[in-house]
Amino acid sequence: MNRVAAVILHAPLGVSPGERLVEAGREAFTQDLVTTLRQAGVARIVVVTSDEEFAEQLESTGASIASSISEEPFHFGKTIQRIVSSEGLDGLVYFGSGSGGLLTVTQVRRLIQFSSRKEHGALFNNFYSCDFAAIAGAKDLLAVKLPPIDNPFGLVLSDLEFPCYELPRDARTQFDIDTPTELLLLAAADRGGEVTRAFIEEQQLTSSVISQLRKRLVDRKAHIYLIGRLNPTTWSHFEGEVACRTSALVEGRGMRAYPDRQESMLGRFLEEVGARRFFTWLGQRADGAIIDSRPLLSKDGQLPPASDRFTSDLLRPDRIQDPSWTEFTAETVAAEIPILLGGHSLVSGGLYLLAEICWKDRDLPRRLHPNPFDWKKERS
Image 1: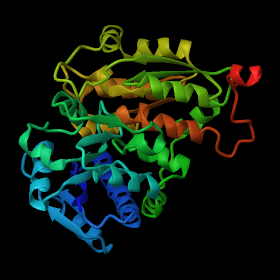
Image 2: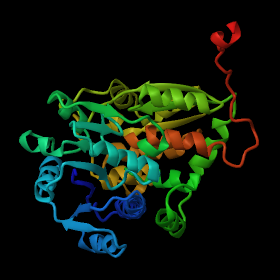
Image 3: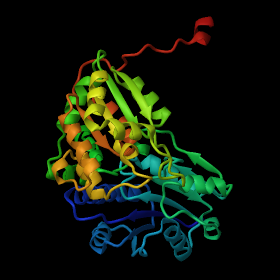
Image 4: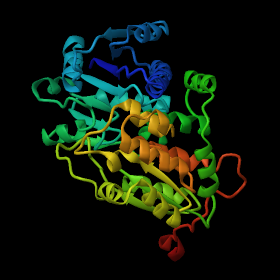
């Protein structure tokens, strides 16, 4: 019988309020994931973290957990290989600590089933930017060079001729707590497991921007701009679920998965005209915006520390050190339209959740678009 385990990688963040919030949110999300894993019959759960206190919290749940301290600097590929070797694994289901917390027991069982196959292969939540994955034939990973971060995991395995597959896209498979914005979305949607909901209630997380966007998303006269690393499938789903019109400016896809660092055309435009004119222009064309700010403000592929990025997402420009991010965030706050800021997860799993949130407590019909006509049925 194949030996299979769930592997959760949890990396502590910094000491800024935004980083502490995201780290605590990921810990709550992970505790709910562990509960789901146990309900799905997963016997072995390996937690890789340098946070011994968090590892002890998970051990207290009664799950079979082995705590490992990651090397410095952390290397995703070497860590996975070390676990496969030390645990003697034939298959594994890997999770970053901000992912997987919305999965159902049935979905987890299917991931375990895939990782137990005799044929090697990989099943990703997002092939181009991995948050979690099921791996069958895990011992084959020991003889190859794996990436230092998980984002390009799918691309690397595909180049190694590893059979790769992708899960259907929805809120459960795409949602990942990557920034404070995801926690605000969970709060607005009232989603998450028992531990996550208790954490959100304790933090009293609310967002006036999300509240304003909700009204516009169900208004046929409204126009919402989506900006950033947007997948066409996600945009198509979002467009079909909301009542408003949407436009998209898609840039930066694969900015962490691919080695080349191509300049963002929209980022260059922002730099040339300045944040004030940029948001004035946007406000003249839209009634709201959802922005993945990283491609716009990346300098030669480099981003400021998470403390600045997360503080920007929380719309607190006075606490940001990087001047370009300070200006961008201040003008976001001053804009005449509601603008929600975040990272890649905002325009990925976040959009699926927003499509649900906007209809919460509303009596309007969910289907505001014409149904496809079935010619086969007509001829019969």
